Image (cartoon, rainbow, N blue to C red):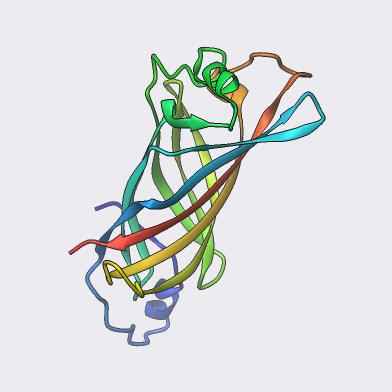
Length: 196
């Protein structure tokens, strides 16, 4: 397992202190019924268009006691894009933007992480869009960890994350620079359920 340390456990060891008991890392599955992958992009300088994807899956290995994180992977189906405008959605799926016919998935695999507090940090990884892979860094917040209050009742994490990328870095240069923006804001909101 590739793992990334998210706390100051290494400093504790360096000081010769006894670290807290370590629980076994567990696999967490993103709950597709409680997951949002959204984006914003400027339209002709007037206002940002908001879109989202509904085909989302992913998992990661995480130990809540040590905050050790690893094996972070996610997949988003490009054909599931929805900007609340059918004709525009068809254009976004075209080769001008996502090229969904040739590249049916956006993928992300983490390579490192850095803590900024007990509940915040960054996760950097390889993002592949249109068959082109570029590094991207997510600003991540752990909102909550608790047994779910209903339904499945399993231990669940609630996570928010944001990032920004340039679509031109992934080969989409249609209508640049004045009509469709280059900068794309990414918004992630999801729950992840601890696997048995």
